[in-house]
Image 1 (cartoon, helix red, strand yellow):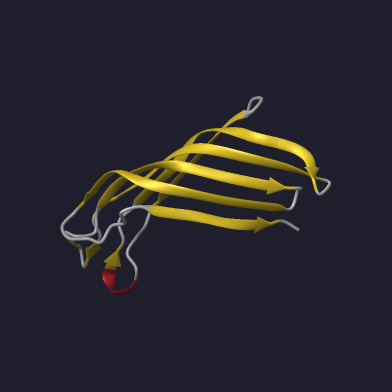
Image 2 (cartoon, rainbow, N blue to C red):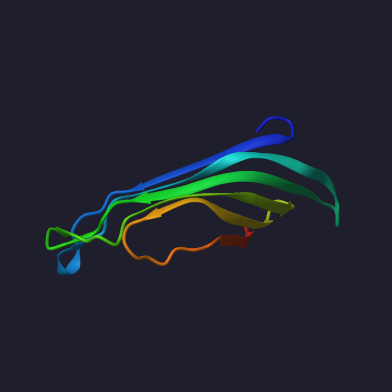
Length: 128
């Protein structure tokens, strides 16, 4: 972070091996991140400090084809890219709430799959 600007980044690679019934889920790469701004900060909300932030997030996933008994399946791979706004509100040192939307930029899946038109994410966090 710098003054009112900040950036986040997240990357996760899942390496998988053969499990029950000789089924092997393909390796998977997930990523997310982007720049943001603190829109408001202060310490006047019921006597506790607070922050309100907005962020432009680019997220995605790429996953290969699963296999069963060494035979590759044709309908389990996907590469997707999403972009969208995220908002966060923090109050004091204990409470935070986040809400974001992911709108598809690229969706390339193998064969026939159900893929989301958009994704909404959000949730509260209470630290104690």
